[in-house]
Image (cartoon, rainbow, N blue to C red; front, side, top):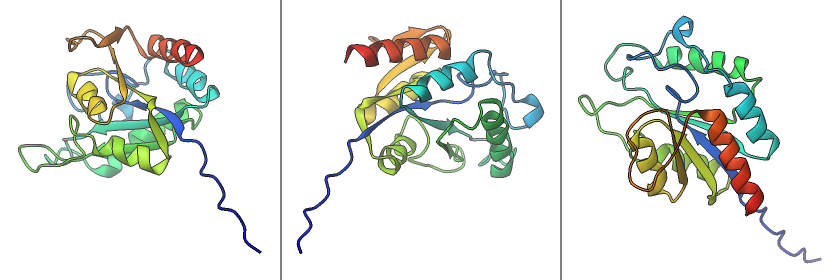
Length: 182
């Protein structure tokens, strides 16, 4: 008996999240020790709201200190474990780019988009239904390369036509409001 091919599931939606300055305090240098990794106020609630609305949550972060020999991938994983614990395990995936231009080139490193492309493929995401929340122009540039909408948090200079909000809570509110209107 012939079985018709089962339809592919609808492509999902996600919020890609830069780490330092979006999820945890920016301290002006590399954040790699769990004791220095402080989750920003409101982050767990914002992530819970996005998750409840059906968004995958994917962290994408440059970690150049690895290539520079300042810390290891295990140190990054320890910080991510602390973040997961603080947020109730809501984050679906963590991608980090260990390279630094002074040591090695990498398509993972933002403003390139390979971390985003990995998340899009892994979770079968529709870029038109995805967002990236970052605190630097390179974050928004990486999002634009794969046609994902970007939101800038904090006080960094924003590219023309970029959306800027105060923090992740405000970004989540904007995403959820936009989601309802689409």
